Image (cartoon, rainbow, N blue to C red):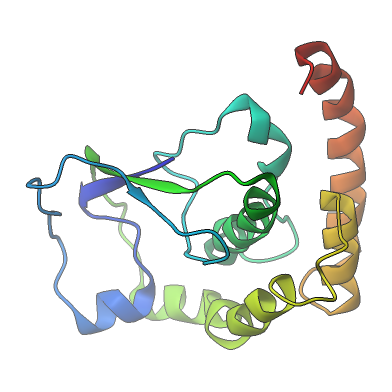
Amino acid sequence: MQALANEQPDVDAIYRLTRKVPFNFSNTNKRALLIPRHSYTPFNAQATLWFSSSFDLMPLPVSVNGRVSDIWRSYIAQFFLHKKIFYLAFLPPCVLQQRNPHNILRDFNAEMDLYEKSNQLIEFLSSSEAKNLNTIREVYEQLFVRNYIDISDLLFIQAWEKTLSPILEKLKL
């Protein structure tokens, strides 16, 4: 569940270069918005609630820029949410975010992988080729082969699985 943030929401540099911020989302609709299965939408690492059944989907890629990492994690997580027949929900705003000073052009350059590679990433995750991938490690291996991430992410995801497996086993997840 991703809650929206008012004042300085987490939007990309292109948005900030072309539209006015700060802004507030409308509070007229107090209901969650469920994203349809097999649709992909970016969500970030802020104001996000993860249920224990999805804890294994929480790792952030470490070899890409932080401005890319949470968005790509969101696509990888949604790949598995679709398999589990779970839904991503966007909640009405519940936080007021104050943003640290940023250089928008520097942010834009840091986000270049989002602009240049995200469509292909989603196409891969939606493909019949990815259909048989059943673990986050298998997905990371395929992302490594396709040059989305580097070897440090493969080592990280192996450590993540090794660390998390006993915990999930105790929780019976």
